[in-house]
Amino acid sequence: MLWSALPRDWQDPDGWVERALDQIAVQPWSLMVLHDLPTGAMRHLDRFLGLVADRGGRVRQDFPPDCLPMIDGRLTQPLERYLAD
Image 1: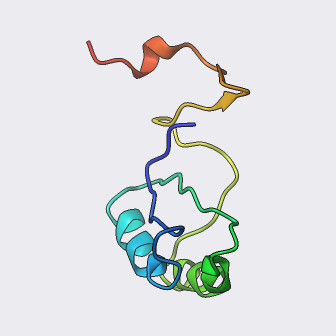
Image 2: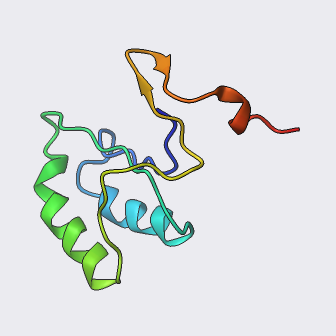
């Protein structure tokens, strides 16, 4: 999967929310990667989702056109559409 927002929740379990909000604020549609690891970062997930909603954002489970879904390491769409001319 190619993503467009990676707030480093695994490195900064208490500070990732602000970084994530900054990353999604500069894009019309973000695909964010968060990790459910035993770091404690997910303690802040409800706060993050609330702040997104407060700012008019919404959470979706589909992919922006500039991200490439993969399953088991295999492309789900032709790679050519992502390559620059």
